[in-house]
Length: 377
Ligand code: NAI
Ligand code: MG
Image (tube, rainbow, N blue to C red; front, side, top):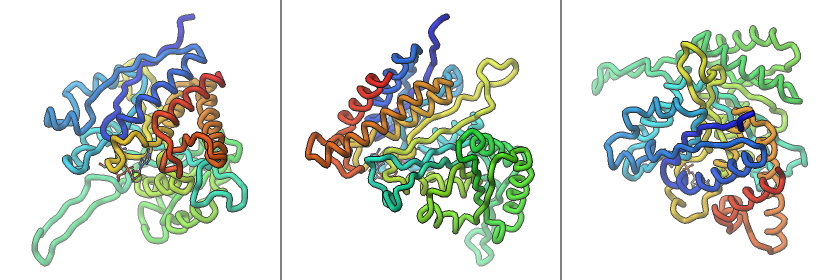
C-alpha cells in the first residue's frame, strides 16, 4: 500500500513561535520516519505581525483555501504587543481560524510530568492527569450587545451570553465520549447556576440529559469558583472537565499552570466531526498549538521551552490516527524530562530550559527529544 502522507500547514507566527517550530517539526518527522508515514509541510509566514507590517493585513486573501488544502494546521504563537494591538493580531488570525473552521472543542491535557517542578508537585506522591474541554465558539464570547447613551449618566453596556442546544450538546457529548475512553471514566462539569440563573441552569440540564446516554461515566459538577480552588488543592480528583467558553478559558490556563510551566502545555482546537473529502461538505481542518504566546520577553534568546510545541505535535499525530507514533512521542517527552532532571541534580549537562529552573536551550532540549524518539521507534 502507498505510504500514509499528511499535508500540514506550518504557521510559526511571531516571537518564540519561530524558535520552537523547527525542533518540533524535527520531532514529528522522527516519529513519522519510525512508523512509516510522511509529512508534506507547507510553510507560511502569514498569521504573524511581521507579515502584518509588510502587508497591512494578518492574512493573504486566499488563506482559507490554502489551509483547507491541508490535513491539519500546526500553529506557533502570534503577537507583538509593542507594535500591533493584540485584538488585531489574535482576532485577525487564530480566533478567525477557530470560528471559520468551527473548531468547537478546545482540548488541553494537564499532566504532572516527573522532572518538572510544579507548585503542587509531590504533595502526596499521587499523579495529576486530567483534560479540560472548553466550548470554543459561543457562550459568553458573543458579539451580541452594545452601548447606548454613551458618555451620559445613563451610559449602558450589555453583552449577551449565547447557549444554543446544538452548541452545548456537542461539547458535552464530546466530553462524555472522551471520559468514556479513559480509565477513570469521570466527567466534571463547570457551572455557576447559583448566580447565573438562566444560561447555567440550562447548561446543567443538558449535562444531566446527556449523562443518561453514558451510564458508565461518573458525573459531578462544581460552581466555577470552588472548582478553581479544587484545581489547586485537589487536582487528582479530576479526569475530564468540561466548561463553557469563559469557564473553560479560565480552567484551561489554570490547569497547565498547576502542573508546572506553561512552556510545556499543548492545546488542540478541534472540529471533531469534519471529515476530509466528505461530499457536499466543506473541509474544516483542526489546529494544534502550544498554550503559550509569543513571549516577547525571551524571544531571540534561544531559551524558549519547545515542549509545548512538540506536545501539540503529539496531539496532532493522535488526531490524524497515528496512535502508536503519538504514544512514542509522549514517552520521549517524559523520558527526556525525567533524565534531564536527574542529570541536573548530578551536576551534568543541564537540558532543562530556564522556565523549568535549568540553563538549557531550545535547541538542546529539542534535539534530546528528537533523538529519544529515534531511539524508541
Ligand atoms: P506568553 O505566553 O507569551 O508569555 C507569558 C510568560 O511565560 C512570559 O514570561 C514568557 O517568557 C513565559 N513563556 C511563555 N512561553 C514560554 C516557553 N515556551 N518557554 C519559556 N517561557 C515561556 O503570554 P503574554 O506575554 O501574555 O503574551 C505575549 C504575546 O503573545 C501577546 O501578543 C499575546 O496576545 C500573545 N499570545 C498569543 C497566544 C497564541 O498565539 N495562542 C496565546 C497567548 C498570548
Ligand atoms: Mg486563555
